[in-house]
Length: 268
Image (cartoon, rainbow, N blue to C red; front, side):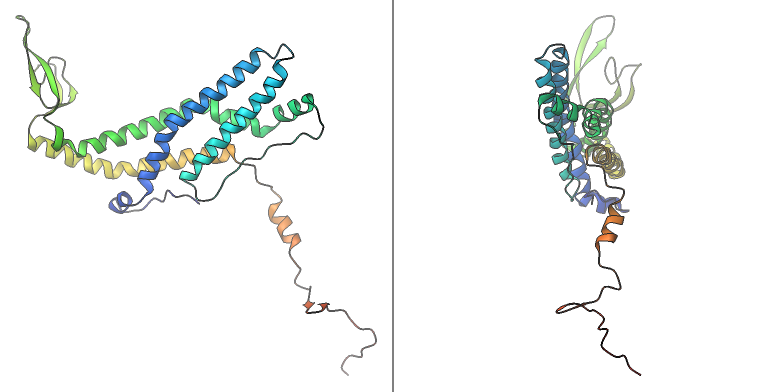
């Protein structure tokens, strides 16, 4: 069950744990995902470079163990947004020996799904999470703009031909190549309190709406991680549960099942 529930009211969504949990989950992937990507890639590259020698065989087994550990760490991080526990399942070698262990691990589809998530999906998930968290943080900072809009200082060119320069206070939201008063500038230069209040109000509205996008991105990321890293479900699980249950005709008495007595006469 997911902890990221989407509510219809933007204010109730803001007051819930969903957007803050989503932001923590996505922000954590920017660091944890990068570390796991580097560790898994280094282990695979080092073992592949030495696989032409006998030393590469145990390194391949060790690399598979490292990949499993990275996948387990990402599954543990999935508990941030999922209430139920998700775990992976891997094949076990049926024969002793290094070759049997190597063959079992590298022919396991679960290991290749782990590699697909840790390596192949990393650039896409990183770009998606960084964009979502970046926009969310910018809007959150815009809400507090009236408290700090006069702190930034920008260098401006007073006279292009003379080379004179100066400085201006405020926040530049747009493109200002020669300062807020330049003829090539476009955007809003927030240098007064009324402008800061208007920008903060606009950021507040956009922030309330963007919480839906942030939670949706976190749910999408969690769905991808859950689908690729968890153990595949048994397609015959429901049928096995039905067969293991007692049938409707099975009657049990305190001393055991009721059996028909051939000597007992029925009612006439």
